[in-house]
Length: 533
View 1 (cartoon, rainbow, N blue to C red):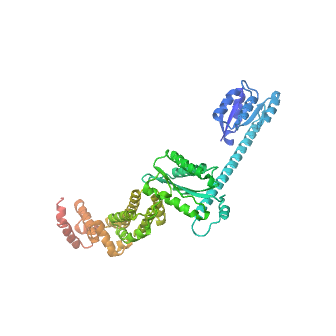
View 2: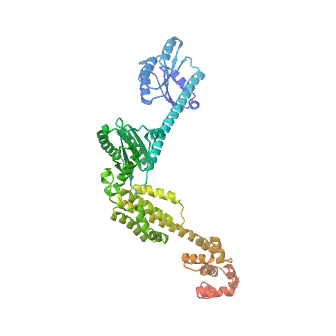
C-alpha cells in the first residue's frame, strides 16, 4: 500500500484533494495534510510517503524548493504538482526535476486518479521486477552451493580428478598450489527442543564468515552445507599466501566464537586438514578434516582441531564391535528386556574406548546400534525405520562426548522400545476392552467366545488368553459376572418373577440361572430378594 502526503497552503484545496482520491480502489494510504513546505519536508523525513501531492507556491519552503531538496537528498518520492495558470511556468520547471505529473486548478477528479493509478501501477511493476531479480539472484546463489555440494560429494580416492574438468563442471576456479579443507561442526543440546530456523541462521552466518575470511587471499573457495549440522569449505591458494591463510583461519575461528556467543545451547568445532599440494589427493584432506571434527568426542568441542589430535594406532572398527554384540542386543530387544538393552549399548561404547577406536568410529557405532535395534524390533511401528534412523543419526551427530553419545543412544532406543511395546499392548488390549463393553451392553443376548475372537481378528484360543490376561477372568466367568450383577439389580429394584429376571440377563433356563446365582452369589435368587424387602 502506497502512502500519500498532501501539501497545500490552502486547507480547503488540500481537503478537496483528499476527498477526490479513490483511496480503497487504488490501494492508497493517507499519510497527512500539511500547509507549508517545511512541515511537508519534515513529514517526508518522518513517515517516508511514496507520493507527495504539493502546491507549487507555499510559505516557508515553496513546492519547487521542497521537490529540489528531497530529490537532491536521493529520496525515492513521486511528486505531483498542483498549480494555477499564473504559476504554470513553475510547474514546467518542476517537471525538469523529475516530477511525475502536474494538475492545474481547478482539480479534475478523473485526471487526479488517473495520475495516481499510473504511479501505483509503476510501483507494482517495479516491485514485481525487484522480486524477480531477487529470486534470480537467490537461484544463482543456491545453484552455486548445489554445485559445491556435488563437488565435495564427488571427491573420493577412486580414479583421477582432473582440475580443468572440475572447474568446468562445478563452476570453480581452482588452480595449481595448495588446498586445505575446513569443517565447521555445529553441535546443539539434544535436551533442548531443536530450532531449525535458528540452526540454519547460524550455519548461514558461519558460511558467510568463512567466505569473508579468505577474500583476497585464496584463488577460490567451495562451500557446502550439511543440513542442521556443518559447513565444509575447500580453499585453494598459492604457497606465498600460506602464512596469511594460517592467520585468517585463527581470526575466522575467533569471529565464529564471537558470533555464537549470542546464542545458548550451541558449540562450534573447527576441523582442519593438512595442506594438500596435489589436487588428486584432496579426498585425503576431506577425510582428515572430518576426522578432526569427530575428535571433539574425545577431547571436547568448541575448539580448533587439526591432524595432530587424530589417533593413528587404532585397528578396531565399529562393525567389529557391533557384530560381536548384535546377537545379545537383538535378543534383548525382541524380548523387551530394557535393562539388558541398556547394558549392551553401554558395553559397545566401553569396548570402543578400551580398544582406542578412532573418534569417527564412535559415531559410526551409534548408527550401527540404531540399525541393529530397528532391524530386530518385532513390534508395530508408526514411523518408517529410515526416517527414524535419519533423525537419530542427526541427534547423535550433535553429541560432543562419548558419555553424551552413549546416553543419547540408550535413551532413544529404550524410549522407542517402551513406546512400541506399549502400542503393541494397546493394540492387543483394544479388542478385549471392546468385547468387555459389548458384553455389558448385550448381556441379555447370546454371547460366544468364538464370535468375540473373530471380531477382534484373533483365533479363539489366543483371544481367550488375552482376555484372561487383561481382565483377570476367563471369558465365561466375565460374562457370568456381568449377568449376575444385572440380575441382582433386577431382584433388588423390581418385583419381576425369577424366570423373567433369568430371561432378562440372558438365561433361557431359569433353573440353570438359579444354579449359577447360588454358585456366584452364595444364596438363591428369592433369598437374595428377601434381603431387600
